[in-house]
Structures are given as C-alpha cells and as structure tokens.
Image (cartoon, rainbow, N blue to C red):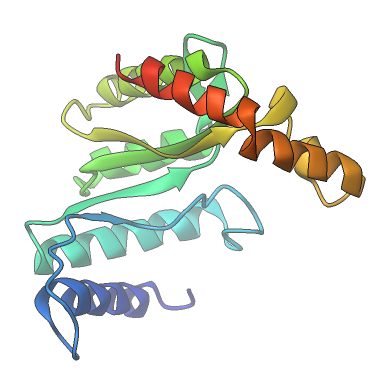
Length: 195
C-alpha cells in the first residue's frame, strides 16, 4: 500500500464492519486478525521491501490495538520463516527483523503465524516446537504460535506443482494431495500435532 496509515484505517473499518455492525455489517466477534500473508513471498504476495512491510505492520498493529483492545493481532503468515534442520529453526533475516521490531516497539504480536508444506507429518510438530523456541528466545513467551496453512507436498518439492512442470506431473501431484496419500498425511499430521 502506498499509504500505510490509510491502509490501517481501512483495516479498522473492516474490523468495525465484521465485529461491530458498522456500515450494514455484522457482529461476528472475530477475535484473530492477521496482518498480511507471506510478505517474504515476493512478488506474489508482497511487492515492497522488508522495511516497507515492517512499517506497514507497525502502523496497522498500533491502529488496530488502539481502536480494538480486545482483539488478537498478529501475523504475518510466514511461508518461510527460516532454515529448519529438523530440530532447530535458524530464522531468516526478515523474520528476525520482524520479531526485533515487535519487541523493540512493543507492537502487538498476540500470535505469530506460519505455514508449512511437506511430505513428512513429523516435520509439522518439529517445526511447531522450533517456532515456539524461537518465540521464547525472542521474548514472546505469551504469543500464540499458529500453523495456519499446511498440506501434503508430494516429494517435498514445489517443482511438481510449478507452472513449468509438465501437465501430467502437476495432475499426478494434485491427485496425490487429494487422494489416499494426502488423506494419510493429514491424519498422521493431526495425530502428530496433538502433542
């Protein structure tokens, strides 16, 4: 957005519309409000640089907290928050900058959201533990960790779903995701995540 303050005001209007009935709206009492989605996924999800996103988050989070102290504010839906070795997470420079900004500026981070696509159900639980460890090390003991986008990724590679992959390979990957392999992955993942 060219004007982060105006964008934040629009966000506040959306919260008013869905939670307070403003402008013919609703009273859904939606508690969780995520600011953005995968800002590191450029240019698909974000076209600016790190500093521009951090400024947007700062302004939007403060605007929403001031007007709606009872909602939970967080994000940013990291698709890639760092290098994961199976046990520990080495946060990316962008993820580190985000957490440092939130801590330094005392910004709302009621929840930290992240995504994971894999072919290994145990990875979801292991990453969840690593993200919790990262949040605690960054001073966010009370921030919730939200794995809010995840799925089976055949062969643990995006190549099979890319536009450059042959149609037959993409079709096979989608069938695996929607078929027995995907169902087994989802069931196993939910069992793993109970821990």
